[in-house]
Image (cartoon, rainbow, N blue to C red; front, top):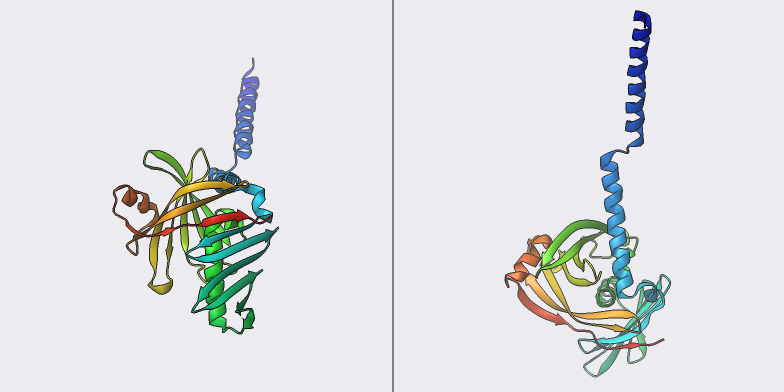
Length: 262
């Protein structure tokens, strides 16, 4: 082989190698982008599996009644639209609140009463909050919800995936700055623990442990032991404090007499 032929061969091999290297680099997406996409898919998949484990598509048209702290509640879903009610008695009067697609009306002894904007917000939030917790995780796919995957952890030797939730200001309600963590059983996909921090009424941190789970016509309901933690406690630290019995039991969240109204 002539000197020219050898040089040409070397140049060809160098060019071929460069082309192969360039092709490999172009075929491999940025690792950071891959990680972001993967995490986004993971948190949404985790939530979808959790919703399915608790009731799935049945939530979209669910119509149930239940009792909570001596008040009678109902909720009726209709593919994104809703009607929540609560009935209670006070000083011999029967109070009936209806929250329908964001609009609250109140009647006292069957007579509609006028409410201030402050009271409308107060009673709407109270009713919405009770139904929200009773039907977890149904509302966690709302547009105002910002989801994040927070990894895995062990609680009492059981593996859990951790879903973080915050809210957009628009559509996130008066407590849009609340933050939540949900500990979801790695295999069963059920919410066994949850925690949240809030800033209203001087703020607070709560941790809840689920018990008494039961499935009624395909929809899962469960009660909670509600614990209090010092203000400023990071949500991720609450399972460790719980296992060390360093959380104070504050109350029981008991949903009674659950009935399907369909």
